[in-house]
Image (cartoon, rainbow, N blue to C red):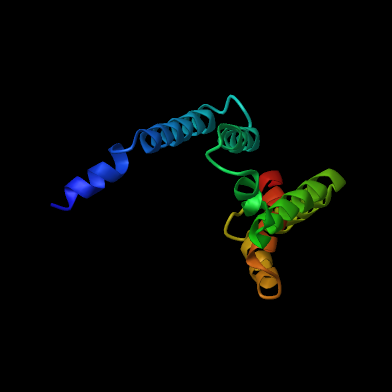
Length: 138
């Protein structure tokens, strides 16, 4: 008996049915764009947000509320810091230093000790952002 109200909630009103199909189709489009990598992921995500706003499914303030979250701002800042470390050459210098210290032995690789030492005093997210370019250069 609980199935009928649930089915009516999803399929009873035509407007709700159209919005549900619209959201599901945008979700499928986003998954296709992310998996095929035809567009950059950030561009694809922003296009989906714009489609929600232009269709009236979300208001502009609802669509942009996630950008005010401190975690989103932190991740964006960490991308900027990571790119800065790559462009200035710091990431490559640290990577070369780690290779010199470790030699040909992966066991001697001190990257984990360095990350652990920094992780004791810094945010783990910050340490990851700093060492992603280093690991890529190694």
